[in-house]
Length: 144
Image (cartoon, rainbow, N blue to C red; front, side):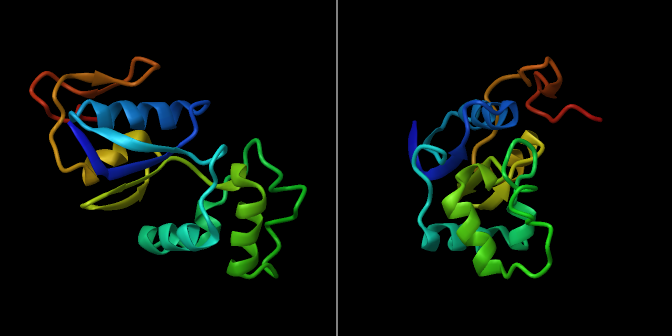
């Protein structure tokens, strides 16, 4: 099944992003994959994503492994529009993965957050790359 209505803003170097992509595929869908480090979203698309997430701009800023501290992005003087500009200039600052489906847009940290917005059920048991079970054989979430 190819469903262009599901898009993942993906970083293949990120385990959480890979697990999220695998959960989407485990529902029988091959999503549109946007490797945002290679193909960053436009300012308009980024603003649309942030609005759909219903999160403050600062909530989508990634700190680890980014120029966040060097740019002093903790400074409350930065306006949202300026922060979006930093993400455009340094796409690594965008927290990932972001998934867009007909049921909503979500920053999928942890990866199983994607289950709340997938239109189709999981097709098989699923465990994260580290072996942590997420979906059991009865297509139910593993209790935590």
